[in-house]
Image (cartoon, rainbow, N blue to C red):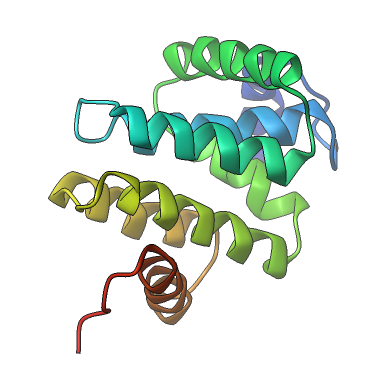
Length: 155
């Protein structure tokens, strides 16, 4: 039953169910970045810059490709009811190390503007779980992101 549902909703990403890379995973990842960037209902210039820098580096793309990716991700974000479809695609197709790297980059986005909103923290907890990662993974990624930002992790 769930397999039929997955096949039915994968059209939201315009991908094949078993796609293991390419633009569908890029789009899913960019949607997560956008979702987090707007979690506090405000996209600061620092957050936008960090999001662009992270995605550009992670996917090794130029500015034009990044602009196209973000445009597509914004469209997909508006079309969806929740983020499960995007997190599930990443969970099923990427190895744990890659998911951990994405989690760390998302935490870096949280701290890009110098503070963490409670909605951002709640979304990070949800994303960690939906990506199939542990609470310990979340704490380690959070600590690494804070240390890189020059903030002391909580004791």
